[in-house]
Length: 254
Image: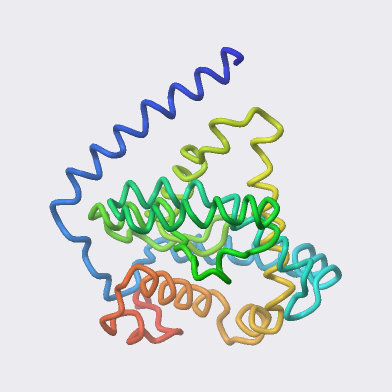
């Protein structure tokens, strides 16, 4: 192992126990349930949204619709399956950090089945066997540890997120076992597969995404509320908080 790779590996090993310790300290309090949209940087976010909209209009959508038909097909599904399987080790790590050991065991079993019988994850025999697993990420881990949602953000390329989920995304990349154990360029396979999966999804759900980005009166507000509603639902925050938000309401408008 080269010196640079050893250094990166060492930093990741140092970071992980620190993250666990922070989580144990934060876990003493439940995360607050967000009831409103926290978007103090809306003006800047909207400018980035226009940039992302341009990327979709001139690059992502044309590529996606030229290679993927609406609804997808077996090849498209294979790409999605492969990408999800490569994220399996990260799901396992986060399930352990969330102290959801049953979920960690199921995610481990799913990864083993699809990697072997499913030929590297191209096929999904685990689901047919009833081993569905549970997608998770470090953003959810931070939520379990007691960290709040933070501000709404829309970074370039990444799209709608929050400060907590963006931090989680960065950590997920750092703690991904494939990134740690595999040397370049093999360690980049997961990133490439994830990007390909996003392109496939853009083509599969073209009508739905188009209605949000191009058919709504305010695509920024529409994307923001849909992201927050979906994310809060994933985290179990469904006590009417997100659903009660007006999708075109601007809480910072004077």
